[in-house]
Image 1 (cartoon, rainbow, N blue to C red):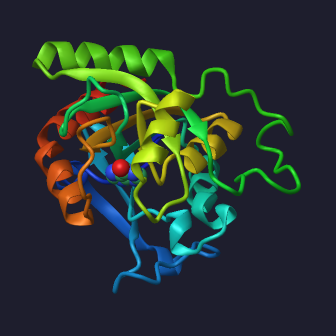
Image 2: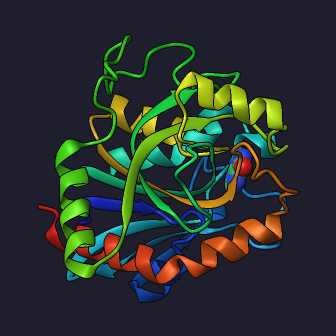
Length: 255
Ligand code: HPA
């Protein structure tokens, strides 16, 4: 039976366990997809996976593209354009982020309720691609019903879920203490280097979005310490079982 997914997952940091749970029916190397960016950093190029999760057909991106790697915003978001052409209606994204909300701890899971785009280049810069309007509305970039569904799943499973604003910045440096302080003043609960471009293009394509961050380090007064990629990965790995529970159930219950 051919797979006709309406839900896509970008397997960002923390969704490795979800990747393991997908019953993959077909994996297509990015290198074999016309115009797809090809990863230059890793030895392998990443794959678009078709398969099943939570009893549903899904599409998953194993390996995403970050602006700091040197891709243009058009390249970073090209996979979301492909998802739209394949009929995707719902996109689930995850990331690792630094916490700027003083009530957060390492390991906090934060549902993204809104974002602040501080990337230096906009993914919709240039001629408008007519999947959406020239001036797309962003008043509800993160779908309220999906947030409510995630809250219900978390409550059922006894998982603590925070809500907050994700601020996207280019990296690749982590923030100085003054930058964390500035981002908090700007209204951020968490800061990271991904997600915002993909979400903007998804919304411009009429795809509804659910986003979730794992707080892997703290950028709050009195808690700022050296951050390494290894620390970030370690904290993200610890949260994987909870992330898998939420994402699987969300997929299962998504129409
Ligand atoms: N800042 C930016 N990106 C991040 C962080 C952070 O503190 N942690 C994980 N990704």
